Length: 140
Image 1 (tube, rainbow, N blue to C red):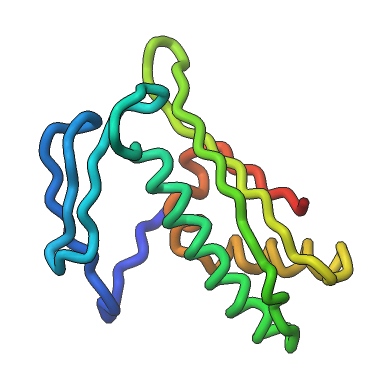
Image 2 (cartoon, rainbow, N blue to C red):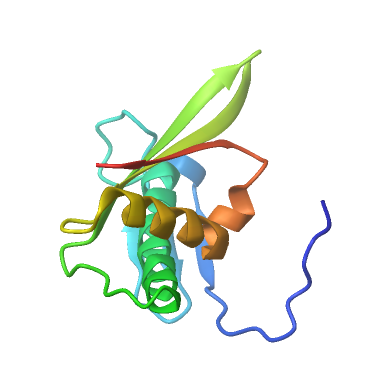
């Protein structure tokens, strides 16, 4: 697979993280200040898997909006994506896998399926993970 070179950078998110999974992270613009804690711990913060799920689901909804416009559809106002990001072990090495559970209330199931498939081709997070981790997209 060939890596696509970006012709024009639209935005660069910049963060500074210290302490790893039990540390903290903040953005260069000051809009993100977050404590981190290991998954499953009782620590005070979130974890990278939750952050990936939040970012991917937000991006996926944006991609569904673009796909809906291309299909001359209106995305339902109640559109939601519940992301589940698993951190797991295989042969003592860590890997990720993901499930995107998509709610498109009021849309015909076949149309909703077409919309999510198109969005999965558009979404930059989906492109970044394609062929690298197991991803399941399910309509709920």
